[in-house]
Length: 508
Ligand code: GLU
Image 1 (cartoon, rainbow, N blue to C red):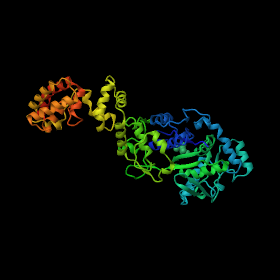
Image 2 (cartoon, rainbow, N blue to C red):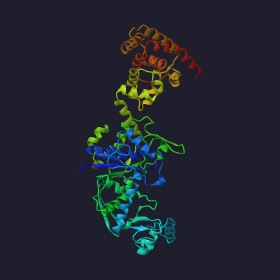
Image 3 (cartoon, rainbow, N blue to C red):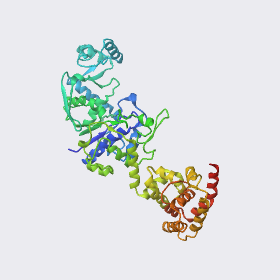
Image 4 (cartoon, rainbow, N blue to C red):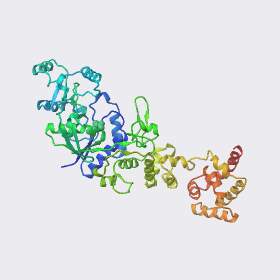
C-alpha cells in the first residue's frame, strides 16, 4: 500500500512554526517511504476564516522547500482539496450514520444549549456536556417521537447531527509515537458532526476526507490527541479501516514553561512564523525569512525539534533528513525551542554555503549591491562569513567594502590612536605606496618588514591601520582586506583618514 499523508491546516491565521514542523514531518515521512504528501485546506469553520491565510500557508511551504505533490495548488485526482469546495459530499455520510444509529438529529438551538449550561452551573456542575446522560432531556431524534421529528423536519426546522457516543466503552488505538492510548467513552461528548449551516464540522470532514483521499498515516500535533478517540469511533462506525495515528509533541517556550504561542515571538524577540504576516489590524508578525534565516537552516532546526537522529549529528540537508527520518525517533514529551540554537544553525549554513551563491543572495537582498561584480561580493563573503550569522551581518560589518568610511569606531580611536600613531601611519603609508603588485602576500611582507625595521609590535601599528582603512576596531585579516579593496582605495583612505581621526580624537 502506498504511503499517503496530509498536512491539513485551517486557514484561521498565519502558520506558526509548529504547523511548519507538522508539515515537515509529514513531508519527510512521505518521501522516505516513496509516498505522497498532500495539502488539504480545512476551512469548515467559517467564523474563524482569515482571508490570505491559505496563500500564506502555500508561500511558507514553498519558502521552506517542503512542497506537497498533491493538493491545493498542486492538483491531483482526489480533489477538490479545499473542504468548502467539497461541501456537498459530506451530508450523505452524516445521514448514513443517522440511518445506522451511530448518530442522531438534534434540534436544540444555541440558546437551549446555553440554558442547559447555565442551569448545570447553578447546580454546581460547571462542565455540562451533551452526552449519553443528558441527551434524553434534550430535543433530538432519540428523545422525541418519530412523528414529532418528522413534523419538525417537514417544517424545515434547522438541525445538527450529533455522534451518539456509546456509554462506557474503552476506545483503544495505537499511536506511532505514544504507544497504546485508551480512553473511556464516558469522558467523551456527543460531538456535532454536521452543523445546521449545512457545513460538516472539522471531525466529520476530516475523517471523510482522510478516507476518500486514502490517507494511510495521520501525523499531526498533540493538540489533536483528544479528538483521536472520536475519530477512531467514526472510522469504526463507517466500517472503514483506520489510518495509523502519530501525535507530535508540543513545541515549548525557551524557558520550558508552556506551549510556544504566536505571541511569544514578539515578547521574547524571535520569530515564530516562517515568513512575515501582516494582520488585518496592520500588525506585523515577524518571519524567519525576513529576519535573514536560510530556509535550510530553519527546516534543519525544526527537524530536530522533537525528533532525533540517534547520534550527535545536527546538520542535515533536506535529502539527508528524508533518508533517516522515522516516527519512532520522535519524542513523546514537549520539545523546548532554543532561539540561540536557531541562530547557530543559520551560522553553520552560512559557512557551508558557497561564496558565489552567498554573493547572489546578498545582491538580491541588498539593492545597494546590485551593481557590484559577483566575484567581488563573493570575495567579501569569503572574508566575512566566519564572523557572521546572517547575510545582513556581512553587509553591516563589511560596509567598508562598499562605502567610504563615514565614521570611525570611537572606542578604538580613544584606546589605540596614540600621539605617535600619526607619524607611524604616515611611514606605513609611504611603504605601502611602493608595492607594485598589491596582493595579500606583498602587503603582508611590506607590513612585517616595516614592523621589523622599527622593532614595533603588531599592536603599535595594526589597530591604527585597520581604523584608517575600515573605520573599525576588528575584522578579518588586514592584508586580505587591503588586497580586495585595491591600492588606490587603501592609499586614499589612509591619506584622508589621518586628519579625520586626529580631529575626532581631539573632540573626544
Ligand atoms: N485542520 C486541523 C488543523 O488545523 C487538522 C488537524 C488534523 O491534522 O487532523 O490543524
